[in-house]
Length: 257
Image (cartoon, rainbow, N blue to C red; front, side):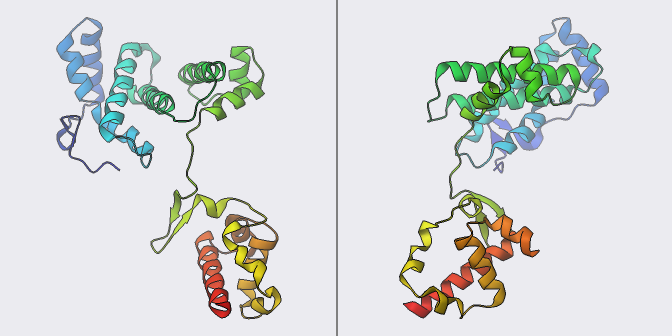
């Protein structure tokens, strides 16, 4: 995703790196109101923003926009960081930057979610970030629900409602030869892409396949298993299941065309 040298007029190939000692020195000056120290500290942590926004690739969002949003999260982290916490600044800042980017992506989500559910989700995420800072570990749904005085089901529902939609054609794995897509991992007892099978003599077609191909076709299209489930059951990789499945289907189609 991030191959650009310049993002938002910032030359990412020349971003400075600050030592921990330098960060602590600058922070003392920042707390004293030194604006030049603040500017230097921000520039010295832009690599952190760059590393975080790479997690959000493949969504069609502008890299420049994500970088600017990430910088807002960085600045919020600087404003709220407390040296007495005895943690690395990056440990504190990364969740803040991620949270800011996620909020931006949610606000630009084309799927509308009711205001009350969205508000609860935002509150849940704020509580999650606070508990993470305080306890230095990921809080459970139960802990978040207790803080908000709602049921854990309400928390799960609200968080699920603001998740980004995923295309069935989105690649989830590539072994260097071909990709596996989200649709390949969706369980479906009647795969609509293979309706041609209803118009041929299945038993005759299956005779043309190897034992392993027969096993895969049976499990995939008659038992409704996902490729991952089939791979786990017969002890091969999902990529191999995908290749064998496509090869078998192609061979059967040629026989009956």
